[in-house]
Amino acid sequence: MGVNEDIKRFSINPEQNLELLLMTEVVGLESLHYGYFEDVPENIELADIRRAQLRYTTTLYDWIPKGVNSVLDVGCGIGDNARYLVSKGHTVTGISPDLNHIQYFSEKEENLEFVHSTIQDYNSEKRFDLVLMSESQNYFSMEDGFSKTIQHLNPGGHLLVSGHWTRSGKDEYEMMHWEDQYIEKASEYGLVLQRQQDITQNIIPTLGYIHHLLTHNLRGLVKFVDIYAHRFMPRRTALAKLFLGGQIGKADGIIDYFERFVNPENFAEHSSYSRLLFIQEAQ
Image (cartoon, rainbow, N blue to C red; front, side, top):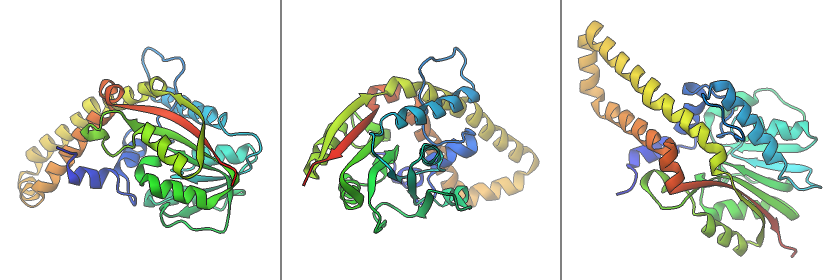
């Protein structure tokens, strides 16, 4: 049986993605990706995660080929990767359909443009030397991703992808693409694989940190609020459960889903995390 449809809808809603909201509002991260650990401290703290996230961006930058000037950042999140690229002399256009991300681009920044759009709806006269998909390639079909990449690439341009892949199709990972199928489909669009690296073990520590927060802190907070409400607002709580019982059940299901998703052992067994660099074949 697949992932519950309500959980799917809430967890990947392009206009208000719950997974990304969880990272910023609950976990307290200032970036939306899982970071990159080289040396793992014995007791990971939030500051360690933030340093790992900066390392993720710097190691991702090392993958950008020489000669790349303009970048289309698909699923740019709150703009940490985009701003780093701008600091290195690139011009960047970031697109995201998430309403939460608009606030992070409220002021016009030199060499950085934000467009509130899905990749499917994005159409521009601009052409780019590189299309970047950092943890965004699973939010749309391979066909949409590749066709829009080709539409907006300069001749001989590159596609750089860094993110999750399924290895088993297990429920909580069934929305991910299969890496080998992705590479094969890319070739149909004239995109040739140049470089590939599995970095699953480098992002696992962040998953462990988030999983601990969900299983200990968030569960405990939800239980505390429930006990408090029953004790001090029994009538209101009873009415709320009468009218919102189904929604409360969905919330529990979403927490269960995220707990399974970020469980390090589960993730390592049924999915992977890797980077792929493609170049467009000469026409």
